[in-house]
Amino acid sequence: ALGVTLLILVTPIIVYHFWWMEIILLYRLYFGTDETVGDGKEFDVYMSYARNTEEEEFVLNTLRSVLENEYGYKVFIYERDSLPGGLITDETLACIGKSRRLVVVLSPNYLVSGTQALLELKAGTECMARTGQIRVILLEFIPVRKVSQVVELRKLKAVMATIKWEGERSRDLRSRFWKRLRVALPTKQTQASERKSERLMFKNAQDGDLLNPSVSEGSSPASNIHDERAIDAPPVSDNSTAQETKSPILC
Image (tube, rainbow, N blue to C red; front, side):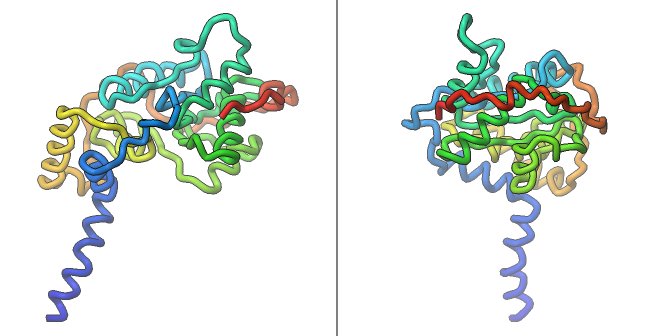
């Protein structure tokens, strides 16, 4: 009797340990409340990343493609979606205020002082701290060692987990990378095709695929993305114009 009782108590813990992300996603799929209804926001995700780099290629060809085409999220890309003729500072702050999540794609290039990326990080963290109407998601594309030089980033990494891109291992939509990212993104109403995808995912779990954290992953919706590698961040100059902006945050 004692053994049966222990088995009943331990089994849910083991199941949750291995499949907690799948459980959350399945619950949200069938019972979750749509977070995007009536909140006054225009975009689900604002992408913050270093421009003119391989990070930009990763954002445009992988993140944007999957989030928009596979999961139906409305993604804001500044160079694509901002209105022409406006001030970069004002337009950036306004659009972050219209977004539900700020996805920060970390790399050494992200930490270069005076860039639009750091302006977006500063605006997003201030808006999150003051109103709670936006959440910041840290996504590590290339490892960054010297995070202490950016105050906002240091504070964020101290209180939240970082979702790590692991090159080829993260390409498959069944990988932990995409599941963790989806858990962090807002809950939205889904179509029947996604329900079918979730059922297939749980069927694979029953076959043992998801019990192995290092499952081999196959094709990807993106191409030409280089594997993750550790690179020291470039030095930060004293000219931090964008980071020190005093423009109001429109949250």
